[in-house]
Image (cartoon, rainbow, N blue to C red; front, side, top):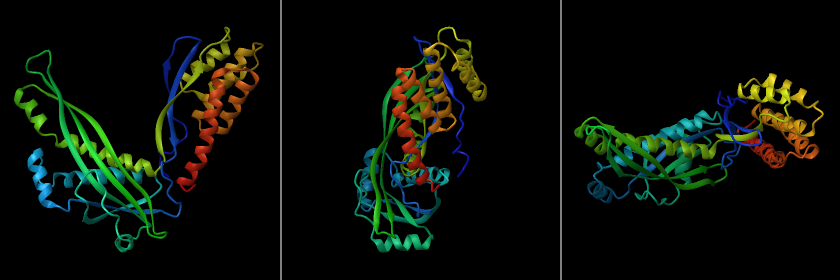
Length: 336
């Protein structure tokens, strides 16, 4: 497991109006969409998106202004994004196959599945447990707008890149296709130049924009098979009934000083005011979630809602129950 799987993160504050409430944001690890059996430790990835109908591909290249087999070059960025995403998870060892297989030639349609003889051959050759194949790919670039800046020589252009990808994941040991997924990835693009020639060149040369979108598409599919980080926000209380300990605890949360925040909030729990104790309990739940102690966080939501009727804590308790369930899934997916 690599350094990405770290429990404590820097949290950021977004102030909200009313009720002394604020919002703190941080990263959490969420389960993969598809659970890959724990026996799978190594994966070969292969490009199977080369067009079968070369004449049709050549005609498309003429009609769209793309070079012949340009999409075949862009698929290398898809595989690179997939490779980096899966390696970065620490869950799999990944090998890129050198073979290039033909597919349907249609970026929005998957071909018939590989024969198991082919899957066995590739997994045996690269000594892997499973195979992931990019089986469909297509890219498109559309100019969506252009404008002149404050200076007449400052020309701005905007575009939209569309990348269609289709993947299958094969597991030869059980003779099963573990995943079959077709998706569309969109990415906005913008550029400008200090001359008409520079701007025109940027518009015509959209190669880098499509490369970046293809890289992102591969990474997105990798995150479908491995747990991934997402950015979430939680409400917390920054004051209550003039209680200095609660206010201090909130300030320490803003500074990411969790030890001092916990100490101040535990003192606030000794207040003779019910609402102060409830808000302190809620804030402690948020801190323990940030620290990765989900069971402790759940306990504090129970205190905040069950004993002190803090409404925010009722829904928060449901969220923590779900996160605890997800944590069990994550531990299975990462082979812990």
